[in-house]
Image (cartoon, rainbow, N blue to C red):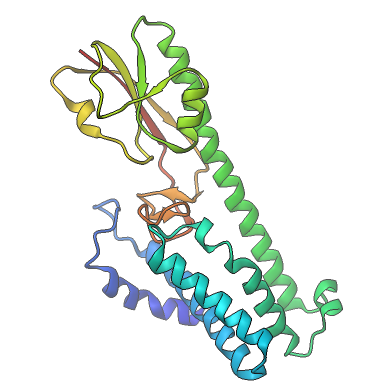
Length: 265
C-alpha cells in the first residue's frame, strides 16, 4: 500500500501528457490512486512469476512464467484493445502462482482452505467482496440498457415515426429484440424518423444528432450503481475496452447513463 501511494505522483507526471477522458474541471487524484494500486499489484504478480521460476527452475515454473508473460504480451500489445476478456487466461496462472507463493511461507493447502491464517483470510474476504461489488455494478449497468430500450420502444409506439438507433453491446441486443433497426451510415433513410443514441456506448456518430433538422424529443437519465462502475469514460473505467480508460473498474461518483431521442426532419 505504501508503494502504491508513493507511485501516485509518478503516475500523475507520467500520464499527464496523455489525452484521457475526464471531467476537465476536476483533478483526477482518485484515478491516480486507484491506478497506482493496480500497477503495483501487477508488478508484484509479475515479480512472483519471475521469483517462482528462479526459485524452482522446473518445467512447471517455466510453464507458469511463459503462460503469464505470453498472455500479458498478447493482451497488452497484440490485441486491438486491452480488456477483461483478454486478461482472463491470467486468472488461473495468477491463482497458481499465489498458492505456490503462500505455500513457501509454510502454509499447506489444508491450512489455506481452513483460513487459519488471519492475513490470508482477510485478503480472501476483501477480494471476494470487491469481486461481488464489481459484478453487481456490471449487472446494474447492463440493466440500464435494458430499461432504456423498453422506455424508448414504448415512446416510439406513441408516434408514427420509424425508429433507428446508434450504439452496440447489450443496448443493441435489447433494441433489435424489440424490433428497432441499427442506423447505417451507408444508407439514406426517408425522413422524418427518430433516432435514439446512448452517451456511454461505442461507435456513435453524434453529428447526426446535431443537424439543422434535428429536433430533440426526449432525454433519459438512468442511474446505475452510484459509487462503482466498470465502463465509464468520465471515471476512466474500461473493463470491456481500454478506450474508455485504463482502470478495469473505478470507485467514484458514477454519472447517470444518458440516452437521447431526436427526430430528424
